[in-house]
Length: 104
Image (tube, rainbow, N blue to C red; front, top):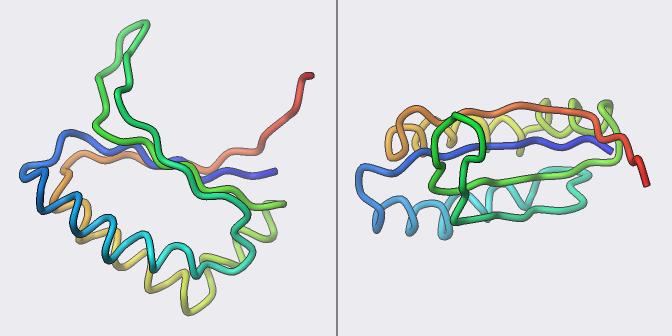
């Protein structure tokens, strides 16, 4: 499995961020081909160093090939372009892609 992780910093305007994220960005992202799971987490607490993030989003695909296809698709390009709007509302957001290895 492969996950796409997005770490959102405290928004400049929480109400505007929440509205945009729920009403615009999530519906766009849910159209990504092959997307298996989309979850968000709140109330993060750093344990060692780091900063507290306002919101953490995790999107999951079956393989690295699937996620590449998703982001190369027309829906993926629209979603990636829209992320720039979210970054204006949550400056300093971070993202990464990683493969998941099940230990048990």
